[in-house]
Length: 215
Image 1: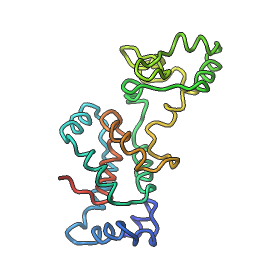
Image 2 (image 1 turned 90 degrees about the horizontal axis):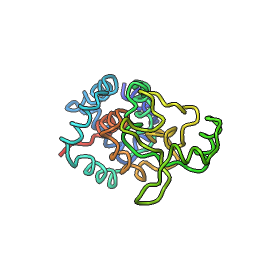
Image 3 (image 1 turned 180 degrees about the vertical axis):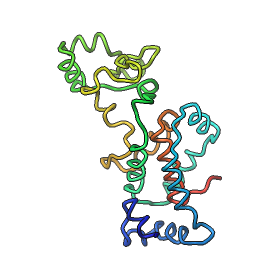
């Protein structure tokens, strides 16, 4: 059963016997923690999607994610376990039923992003810059304009330029990418946990998977 569980989350037998995974493997096998796999499975099967509830939980937990980041700096676990869990969570959440990422964070756009949007809208890059972007007053970066309802391209919960959306939008929430180590992006991941159900549920499941204990 345990070997099958490791395989399910992308960890082979040899890897599961190394470093902290060896500790985790023994912990999962221990009678006092025999239900952890079932608990992890139940978390993945019952993701939380209510945005108010997610924000409340993150705010109530206070500095837990900061403590978790510190924990990860002193304990090494394979990044692909995190990515595997993220894929499981992503399959259970419909982003178009949420679209909160189109309402909360700012979106940086590159010259290539602007050109892609211009082609999609059959207009000029200059017109896209004029009508749909602003300069961030702090770092002078070009960002998509925000309205009271969120991104300038948001229509209800749908993106009007979805096929030509900026790279930052295509890759969000950046959980399954292997271009950067998990440690290198955990600060950003935790920062957005309160606004994205995929991030929140992935973090919570990952904490259980690696045996992290809340303090």
